[in-house]
Length: 434
Image (cartoon, rainbow, N blue to C red; front, side, top):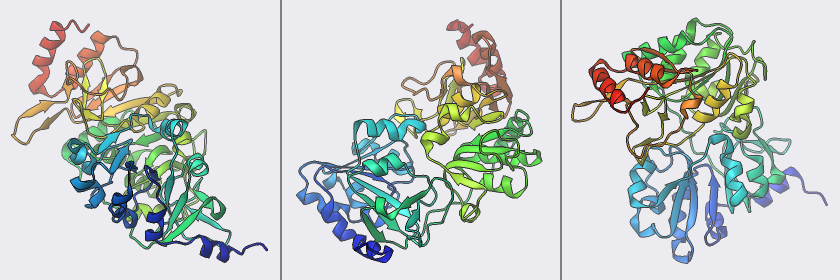
């Protein structure tokens, strides 16, 4: 006899404690951060003879999960991530967390070529009358779902219905756990005057009708605010931000010139304010799609006048961009910066742009230039100097496209903080950067 939808839901529904009993020795647990599970994960430590590996996201570990923060469990649980946040940076010296270097568009497939998730955790809406759940504010990897040993959906009425390739039928889910946790949101930080000046410079590079990708932080938010006078922009981005929702509601972004997915905002995931969540909910004009599609450089390149706009930690005088480490110390991850930058340089009329403050002031009051003659030893090059068109600071725009090293050096010194220009010139001459 065929089971009804309600029979299927009832048969698949378990508790967190029942899920803990099903976690095998040495398991790999992938997917989203589920606090109800992670709060209790340490309780299985005594039966483990091989460590369990947990995948982490940017905000992972802000809550004091015992399995992650308590040293007695360090040999029982390991955490891996393609991108560090504050908690993973803090815990890194303890040796229980490690980064997987990878470009974002390839992250799922390269992992699944070598490994698989014994347990894949999803954060979803409740099951609808057609037997589907929606994966909320991110597009799932269907390959990961199909290849996982066990797929567990935490169904939560607070998770919004977002359109795109986000739906999953209950038949592809092994277990359901009911959850009512609030979803995480945050409001954009106030913009500094430096951010605003940089945003205005970037805006001069972006033509009406262009398709844009923006990163996260004050400078990308300032860029978005500077776009308020633009017309007919489109969005094709790994992360949909609060500032992008503002641009849509202001009529600046309408996607009318886009060559792929016209009239539709395309992203891989959304992260930001409650207002952004409300904007994404059941919005036919905003679709989330898997990152192996959204961030594929050859897909990015198909957009109309694609502008990739990101920020960095430091840049050398030849145009190498370090965006994920401070020397050898991992700070974030490669993310999609190289994906969208490479896509933009192969797009007719496209532009690969990195925008950043020229210098930072350390806690001891000393000022440090973010433009270096050579990168800090050990720094990771996130964006090749071959994949950059413009570098922007509060002192102007440094064109890089088709420029020889001599011109790149001149252009970058011109936008460096004035306190460091003479020193940079002397170092460039010493190193024969011409």
